[in-house]
Each structure stands twice: as C-alpha cells, then as structure tokens.
Image (tube, rainbow, N blue to C red; front, side, top):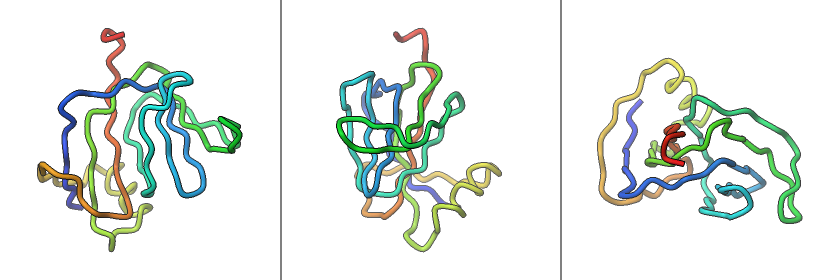
Length: 120
C-alpha cells in the first residue's frame, strides 16, 4: 500500500485520541490540540481503547496513550483503499512511503505517533 507521508515540522504532544461520529479530536489531558473530520487510523504502540466515554458533552471511543506521545506526521491513502485494508497493510508492514509537503484531500488519514517520555 502506498502512503503519502507529511512530517510535522514540530511534533504535537498528546495523550488522548477521541473518535466520535464524523470527527476525531486529539487532547493533551483536557486541552484539545487538533480535530479531524476524516476517518482516522492511529499508529501507536502503547495505547488502550475505552469505549463510550463522555467528553465535553459528547460520546467518543477513546484511545488513551499509556505513555505521553508525540504526533509526528500524517499519512494519506487513496480513497479507493478501505480503512480496514489499510490497517491490515500497516499491521503486515506492507507500506511504501512517499514524502509530501502539503496535506492531501482524502477520506482517510493515518496519524503516526512516537512515544517520547523523556520529552515530558
């Protein structure tokens, strides 16, 4: 699977990813850092999922990072690739990266995280 990858110029520290209907939000504790309307595939090693968590009056499925984490870049895939197929390719290590400078129009965005506990 080909992934167009855009590295962030400065990593964004987060510890919670909250996925709701039609939106995904990234938080550092209670502070919202970013919001996305695309389908999101998080790539992080140390996390755990909690379902139906209320945050700011809305219900989310929440991915809690067990170590503080940096968002380091985004991946963009073809709209013809279903998210489930993308997850299988990522898990199998069958990903080819091409670096890009600009965000790409796509229905699915892959978020790449790096655990960096010594940064905090």
